[in-house]
Length: 369
Image 1 (cartoon, rainbow, N blue to C red):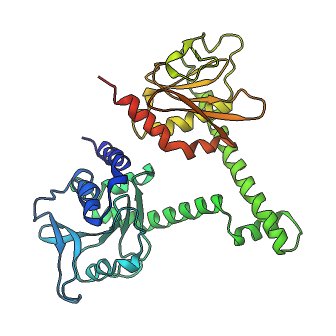
Image 2 (cartoon, rainbow, N blue to C red):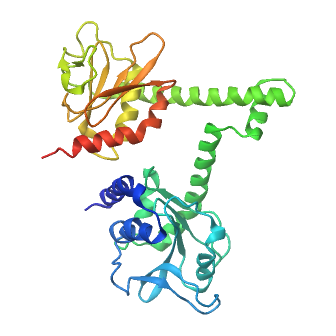
Image 3 (cartoon, rainbow, N blue to C red):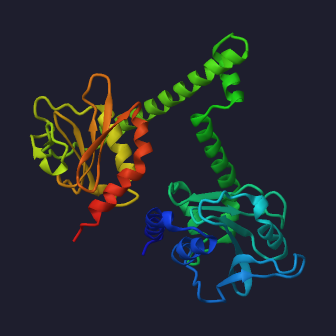
């Protein structure tokens, strides 16, 4: 199975089973060992490749062990320290990983709780593991931009020199992306003060900073929304016109199975807006963690904008109710195909319902022959 498919399969397993994992050993068995074997491609039952409870006595405290050592030509290449699922990954609780990194030939250390995998090296000082990871993999929010680097750590494509050559850039780009995401969610006082000073002559009083904190947060969300719509507009202009579909109109019904085709997208009265297309792209991006992108399609109607699996109006993933004058709703479906509408303040609020959308896609896809 392709590398990316193995990763998505493990992510699907994590979503389904994470609620039942209550210990570190269960975390190892359910997610970490499959990651080593299925994603990285090492034989967990071959002691020449994977050594559990690895001990290196020289220079370390007696009796301490690191959870796994991945070997190549009888030399340690990767060290892995494990924590219980959802336990915060704190390097202060990974002293073995630090010590073993300095007394083995390993240049890569992994600290993981089964969901998040932090990859470390010794970029700052030789033989001393960095305190900041150069690569972070979150199985429930996979950043596809780092997959090429992850592939170079697999058994089949292992290329330590290539990984280390790009590790410094990966480290700082990844850290900057996480900082920017934090600033967009909750602007720091330093950022608020800086931006306020650039656009206003107000003094940096507590009240002014508090007011501008809200303004910076609002401006950030609007900026992202505008960039998304801008990119979608460009993409739509460059793409070929889609084939017409029969739209779905359920009228006042809340049952997905009661939907009936109403007409083509081009039929008078049916207007597809940029906001609907932006919402569709967000739902499609969420759903693509479960199925191939081409399986997620759309049909517009006078009443709502339907997002479907396999262009089948009996396999509705979600609906966008964006035709109201002021309020917008996202329609979500349960196992009985009953729709529940949730209010959206912004289109980006769809991301808050990502897990319900994925559940629906998994449920619909499980009926495939």
